[in-house]
Structure formats: structure tokens, C-alpha cells
Length: 524
Image (cartoon, rainbow, N blue to C red; front, side, top):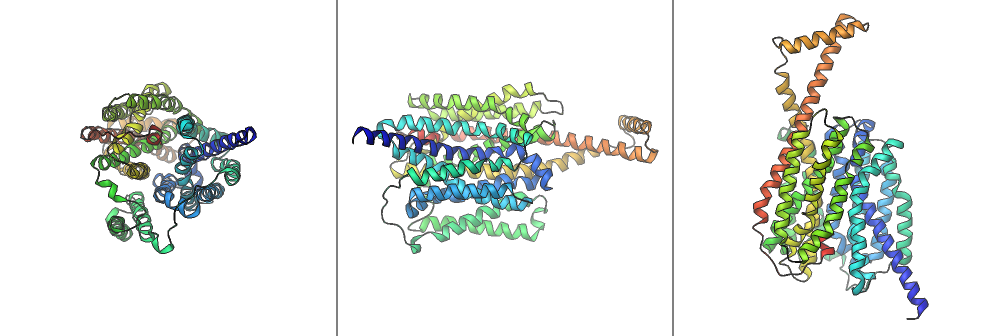
């Protein structure tokens, strides 16, 4: 290869790297940028707290369904074509999300966006790996890893800035120019590797795909709507519960017996991976759940704007970004990953307990700083160690299958986590409000004095006595709802913390393996 060809090849490699990182950032940023805009969406679209959670969970469901199919789709259509098609689907769905006129339109387009985005993170790393020679792959993966780590940091503050200075549809519109550029560069510069014989339509595991989609979507609906529809007294909830249970059973049976399964469950014979998938699910639950709940609390209870709610997450995210490479190096030097993961789970427990203690109607910005820094440290001690432990006793192709499985379970944990948290909050809000209202009786002297004071003040501003009394009752009721909301947020933090604490003994049950796991793969 002459000098000119080397320069051309080097330039192509740089362009492909930039394109892949851009696509990975698009997917990661879009998963978190929505969080700080939920409050504005809720008011603008006339949605309830339970309903607005679908904006996040629909995207996650799309991801969960498509990620296990990514390898097969790449083989069927060629990696370049599939990657470019995913970018185009993601970009078009972003435009449609911004143009949504009601909540359920937005949820549908977010699901389609998730189907397109599911391939971006998985395929972009594979493309970078293939385009670099073995001796330079470490550097390439380090660059990619830095982009992936920065992505979640950019989401909340960027979303907050856009919501405050423009409006929530623009959090989707910013994807349009980047998506068009990425698709053009992909079609021009990315090359597909030569695959083996493609599967015919008869060999495709259509039944497995259908069972997985039906099981996940039914269960998600149950979790989202169960509280509002009074659970099993609703025929729809009851029917979907049966549908979900049967679909999961058929999915497991199909994938266990199918010759070409869409998800190879045989790898779960490995004990470490079985425990690792559970831990990955819980990690996703805590990661996405806490990222969802903190901006919501700051905006609804403390009346922060979207930009303030996003900016407060930056220091903790930077701690995670700084510590993850350090954790990776410590594991390579021989520190047992299950010790780190156990410590990470315990630190996340302490963070959650800390959060349950400081939440109040007057919590200040300074109260969150060290609590969120502890969260950032805990997350850095969980990502790589859990993946490393899960894969440590696998060999050959099973390592890739196991990594895909833990990634899917982490995403599924986040999806279900948000749904469970919103349902739990609705229940606890009602329960705490009922408990507080019990004390609002005529015999309560303090309450009577406060009501009389509010009524008098409103009459001084020109209200008639009946109007002033009704307004005073309304103010008192709003105060009760606010107090019930604070107690509910405390409960959420407390129970998430307990869940993480209960994981520590399971982590210590994992056996040490001799398999050398690629740290870049573990980080991914």
C-alpha cells in the first residue's frame, strides 16, 4: 500500500470512528435527555405521572426487543445497510416525536425510535473494532469508551437548556442534522464484512420475536396501568397478565428448543451469568430509576427549572467517567471484581438512604452534592465488575452472547424500574394522603388556627367569607398533597436502597473465573 493509499485509509478510519461515536452518543443522550423534559411534556400533553413514564419506557422496550436481533439483522442485510437503516429510522422517528400532538402518538414514535436506536450502540462499537488493526484497537476502544461515558452526562443538562430556552420538541429535533450526516457518512465510508450463508425466511425465529415482543409489552402495560385500573379487577389487566405469563413461557420454550434462536438461552446454564443477569437487571433498575426520580422531584417538589435539574447531575457523572477506567485497571491488576461490585452495591445503598433522609420541601442544592458524588462512585464500581463477573467463566462465542444478554437485562431493568416506580409512587401518594387527612379534624387546634388565619388573610384581600374559606381549604389540601409527595419520594429512595443491599450476599456467591474478559467489551 503506497503512501497516498495509507493516508486515504487513515482518513477513512477517522471518519468511521467519528461517525460511530456520533451514533453512540445519539442513542445514549436520547435515553437521558428526556428525563428533565417530562414535567413540561406532562403539562403540555395533559398526561398523568403514570402516563408520562411511557415516554421513557416505550423507548426502552424498543431497545430491549431489537438488541437481541442485532447480530442476526446485520448478517441478513449487511452491517452497513442495517446500521444506516437504523440511523434513518431513529432520525425520522425523532422528527415524528417532536411533531406529536398527544401523548400516545409520542409513545408510539418513541418506541419506533427505540427500535432504530437499539442498533446504534451495539453496532458502532463493532464497526470501530473491525476498522482498526489489532495493535490499535485498545486506543480506538478508549476513545469510544470516553464518548459512551460522556453521553449520559450530556443528556440532562442539554435537555434542560433546550427546554428552558426553546421547548421540549427541540430535544428531538437536534437529532435531525446529526442523523442525516451520520447516515450519509455510513453509506459512503462503512464497509460490511463478508458473512456466511444467510438464513432463509423459514429459518428465522419469527415465533421467538413475537413471543418476546408480546411478553414484554404486555407486562409493561400491566405495570404502567395496573394501579389506575385497580389491578386484577380490570378485565384488560387480567387478560394481559395471562398473555404475558404464557408468552414468557412460550418464549423460553421456543428459545431453548429452536435450532436458530433469536436469543440463545443455553448460555444461562452458566451459574455466574445467571446471577449476573439478575444483578444487571437490578443495576438498570437503580440507574434508570434514580435518573428518572431525581429530576422529577427537583422540578415538581422544589420547583427547579429543567436546566437546574439537569446541571446538578454533571459532577456525579464526571466521577463515574473518571473512575470507570481506574476500576478497569484495578481489575486487570488482580483485584477481584465481586469485591468491587459488592462495595458498589453497598455505596448505592448508602446513597439511597442518604437521599431518603435529606428530601424535604426546603432541600437546597448543596445538600445533593456529596450524595450524588457517592452515587457516581457506586455506579463506576458496578458497571465493569458486574459484566466481568458475569462473563468470567464463559469461553469463546459464549462471551459475546453473555455480554449481549447482560446488556439486554440492564435495559429491561431500567424499563421495568421506571414503570414500577411510577406505579409505586401513585399508590404511596394516595396512602400517605389518606394517613395525613385522618388528622385533619375539627378537634385539631393547630389546623383550625391555620385555617382561620388563611381565611382572614384572604378576606383582607377582598374575598367573600365563603370564597376565602374555600380557598383556605384548597391551600391546606395542596399542603397535604405536597407533604404526601415528599414522603413518597423518601419511600422510593429507601426501597431502592434496600434492594441494592440485598444483592451483596448474591455477589459474594459468584465464583472466580480464569477467562480474560476484554475491558472495552465489559464497559460496553
